[in-house]
Amino acid sequence: MLSLNNVEVIYNKVILVLKGMSLQVPQGKIVALLGSNGAGKSTTLKAISGLLKPDNGEVTDGSIEFMGERIHHRDAAEIVRMGIFQVMEGRRVFEHLTVEENLIAGGYTRRGLNLNRELEMVYHYFPRLKERRTQRAGYLSGGEQQMLAIGRALMAQPRLMMLDEPSLGLAPLLVAEIFHIIQRINQEQGTTLLLVEQNANLALQVADYAYIMENGRIVLEGYPNDLRQNADVREFYLGLSEVGQRKSYREVKHYKRRKRWLS
Amino acid sequence: MELFLQLTLTGLTNGAILALAALGFVLIYKASDVINFAQGEFLLIGAYLIYAMVVQFGLHWTLGMVITLLIAILLGVLIERLILRPMIGEPLISVIMVTIGLSSLLRAVVSTIWGNLPQAFPSFIPTQAVQILGAKVGADRLWAIGIAMLMLLVFNLFFSKSKEGIAMRAVADDQTAALSMGISVSHIFAWAWALAAVSAAIAGALVANIVGVGPELSNFGLRVFPVVILGGLDSIPGAIIGGIIIGLLEAYTGGYIGQGLNQVLPFIILILILMIRPYGLFGKEIIERV
Ligand SMILES: Nc1ncnc2c1ncn2[C@@H]1O[C@H](COP(=O)(O)OP(=O)(O)O)[C@@H](O)[C@H]1O
Ligand SMILES: [Mg+2]
Image (cartoon, rainbow over all chains, first blue to last red; front, side, top):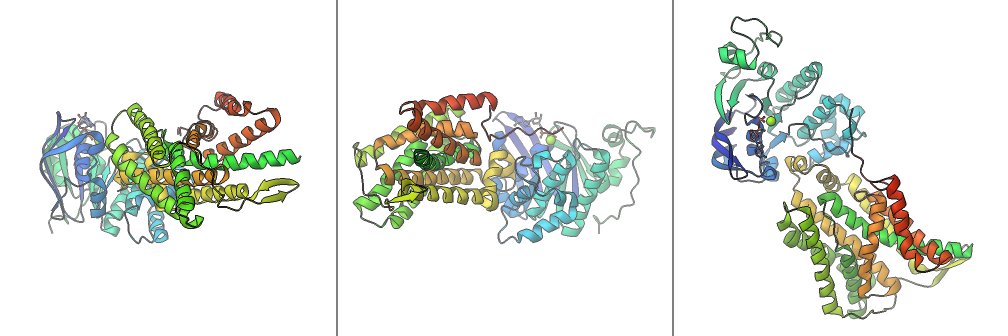
């Protein structure tokens, strides 16, 4: 559905940040993009969604294709209309707008949108937003703001939703709740997901396939189960030492995963 | 009592017109952070356009008003497109200088087309005096209040209910986030300039109807400053209430204390209020969550 081939991104005409980035996102799947701070994950998403411009960044080489069309020269509004929606890092809700107004803004590109039905659909996934529909978004808790940011994306009914670190700064219980909802959205709405995370442990639990990036390019990729067995991943991303003792993270739960990927 | 009513109605008329002029200013500031020093010239152009339609072309004022508004929309969009858009990313001060330049340019265009002499023209809105609780006021003033209030109501509905209105406020809040949901920021800026030109043109037409047209109408541009600073630069209700407060203050000081002082008093009140509320009465508070 989405494929990046050797993409290069330069900021301010001089700073080379993506150095030949390639990845594939197949329709209907959840693909995780992992990596530590500064690896270039957000830059990758912005290159796809056309949001590099306000940051003075530019795709200078390679290609980005979505549903068979090259999109890296299109502007952000056009890309949203093609069905790609990026939920930006840090939630970025419109603080002075109410919850419901935020959602309406999310559905901006939809023609002939049945507003009430779409709002109900979002409230069905996030009942807490319904309780707070007339409140200003700036006064929501961090978790609620993240829900609102995802709800805004749902309003656009994208084919591909890209989430930039949805777990950032949230309590573990909330993160689990949000990840669960993300999975449901993938299954029930058929939305393809590209999930950017630093929290590898969690992301590997929900993803069908994962890429690990460092310093502007992919260094490792594979199915979550295989990556979990990889010594480097265990050490650097899951916080497990080679002997298998726990370091800082809880022991990785072994998930019985249908390999839908292969079938 | 009669004098009081008289002054109140005069104040409300001026206040409503000021509020309309201020509204456009707030719109542009809210959406794009640009301080538009050409707002008074928008009003001037609105006044001359309606003069041209009604007096020079002999159209009925309703038709004249429609054409005036269409030209205002076009003007707003063109200015955004040709003058402001190339300035995106430039320092704010340069953008502000550009709007100052724009104001001189527009004033020059007006004086080239219509000359520099004030022109009276027969009021197109009925002017016969109406008795209200013993005070006599021109019906045109009541019309002005009514039309201004109606416009403010329409703008308010636009911002709270319509998709474009909500998108405009979203852009004011976070441009990049708005862009990420497919809201075209330049499209929204064009809307803001068009609406600013429209509200100023309506204000201009209302003023022209009461006092005629002349180059000094652009002074309204300066009178807008106490209004918007009082109400909060980015607050639409603030523009309305600020306009009415300043309008009434000017009328009362003019009537009870003396002409001359009424030009100064708004600024004195302004300073007092800002000492208590630095963001203006309704300015956007910075939301901080705990
Ligand atoms: N607007 C920008 N201008 C210049 N450099 C930037 C800009 N945004 C990000 N970078 C640099 O690009 C690199 C990757 O950043 P980013 O994509 O945000 O990483 P991640 O999301 O993986 O933490 C970092 O070194 C960062 O300093
Ligand atoms: Mg990032």
